[in-house]
Length: 260
Length: 250
Image 1 (cartoon, rainbow over the protein chains, first blue to last red):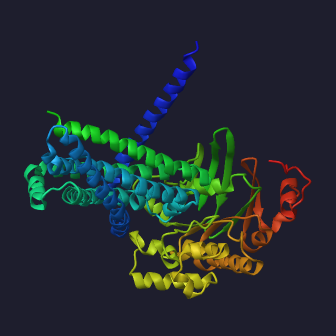
Image 2 (tube, chains in turn yellow, brown; image 1 turned 30 degrees about the horizontal axis):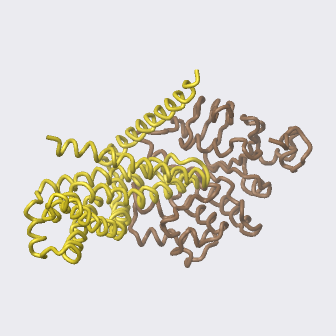
Image 3 (cartoon, chains in turn purple, yellow; image 1 turned 180 degrees about the vertical axis):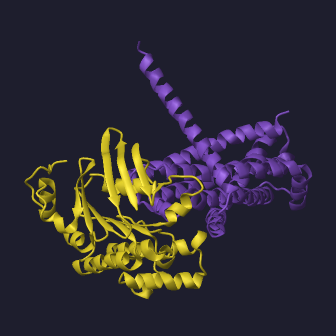
């Protein structure tokens, strides 16, 4: 008797979450359908590429720099327990390229871009700008969603590549200036143990995360409720959904790429 | 030109349209009047397919109104719409808002030509060419409304919907806009449907007036008969009386 209401509450939340996931999947299928059918809007795509890619570079770069440095310190401290301090360059590079570069980069872009897309589209919806687009014979999915999804899917892997390099640089700076590594040895160890597939897997994760980020921003923005509160709720939901989906997708892709 | 038969639309338990029957002839200017929240904007959105009616039929030039599919773009090309709040695109300068349809799609024109046309339309709604390069956020509410009007008429559509075109304008500019709407109907031969609460506008714009109340067309007739009708709802509305069959608490 007493546990029924809490269980029902949990059930409702789970069902609502699954229903939302289903709607996002349907929205994604529709976006992919529009992606391959004209008309195309190259000007909107380039503008989205600039907004999502170029303007996210500082935040991704700063995140990667400090993460790379902290990672080198942690690996050194942990490795010292087994007299394995020499693994710092290789583990820092592998950790950055496989996991931290894509995941932290993805989360930072989610915070910056999913929120901005959701707020912009939500405002467009409540001020009837999306209805106006329709009356001007322009499909909102083609004009607003497709350019953003395409731009994010292409831009985030590039951001991840930049983040990986800056993260490795952060580890190198800490390794050389604080941990006493020889600069040439540090770089040689980084190169020796880093495989091409480590980099490719990270970039593939970046592409998947970029798709998720723009998809969540567009979905929640287009389905925003009325007024400032509706737009605020849409923005929050976009960031939360994008972040959770990035972490879940990261696990799935890691399982696919690296499980024995 | 436009025919609505038994159009119904509910939002949850709120039945907004309860069987609307209405006809607008080609080149005619119909003004829809009615209290706030009686579904006038919803009616226009049903015709455009922005809102899907629960029941009823809508035809435009004898063809069913298209809410999707391959012919949708061509169907919408026949329409221009002035939204109540302007609905200008914040990210684009004024001239690109006005020339939006001329910069992409089937009616695409060279950029210089589209810009010149946009400036001409801005002049027609009483705005100087310098406004062309400003962004909507830099304009007053009344200026935004006029830019939106310029956008609605820019591609010279066959059918134009005006949702409260003079709200937020001073009396002189409201007069300019009323004259412009009349001119668009007379010179371009466009069919117009206008929603307004401004009785001066009604008298300046309308060939025919329809009053929407209780989800149905309560009264419809030529403008000349509006002041003579003995319908108590129309009489209360056009004279702005608090006393009458229309409840003031809604």
